[in-house]
Length: 262
Ligand SMILES: NC(=O)c1ccc[n+]([C@@H]2O[C@H](COP(=O)([O-])OP(=O)(O)OC[C@H]3O[C@@H](n4cnc5c(N)ncnc54)[C@H](OP(=O)(O)O)[C@@H]3O)[C@@H](O)[C@H]2O)c1
Image (cartoon, rainbow, N blue to C red; front, top):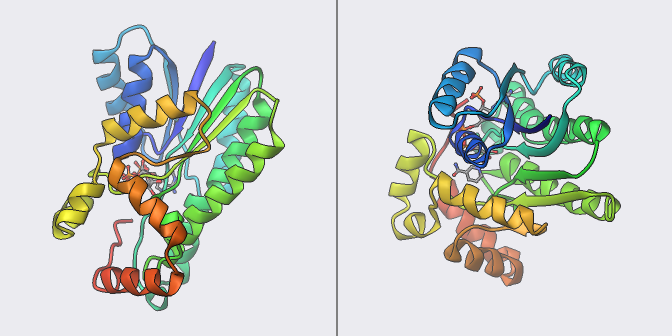
């Protein structure tokens, strides 16, 4: 049987991907840290969309042993994985000086190490067409003072998936990287968007919208996906504006706030 793997399935965007894939009749492998959250999500999805099979796996993605167990368990089930949707991510935001080693490594591990490691596991299990969608961020397009670790890990994802997309050309693999602006998923993000005023409003796209655009573009094997007109403009200008100017604007905006939801 065919399955779609979704990491970070119990988060705001992960849930939206999970519902949308179930609506499309896809069987799901949902990965999260808490079985209770996963069970609640499964029950709710099955209430709405009958007939799909949902398998749940808890995994601390920062832990190599936990990741290895996850993939040995999935391998034992002998399923065909048709899609991997890498959603899990940590958006801690603060001046680099204020990080502890623990927070620093946690964010790098979830955003980068785990995503690349899981992608390798899934590619090793590949049996037929495989589509890989990875959630990066518009923040990965430019180095961001006061959001440096997040922006660096998300940027590394863009580079990594661009590179392996080339390596895997002609091998029945689609690879797209999603770069959303703001998505009102958690309460702290919703408040943040409000505080940003007009630019927050223009950048903000609902999880459902982001998922709809992402899946449509993944189908077309689009390399980079930027949902929303305003975000496309930001993406374009970040490519042509001198970094000396960009860094000033970003630092002014981001030095006044701190986000530490994990
Ligand atoms: N919201 C935005 O404005 C925005 C914008 C651009 C990009 N993004 C990206 O979109 C993705 C989803 O964000 P979101 O807004 O939906 O945030 P969220 O609700 O906080 O979801 C984050 C997800 O990551 C999972 N996760 C974190 N640490 C983990 C670990 N050690 N092991 C396993 N799973 C772990 C969480 O699992 P638990 O449920 O177990 O906690 C949760 O499901 C992230 O990659 C984020 O960087 C978000």
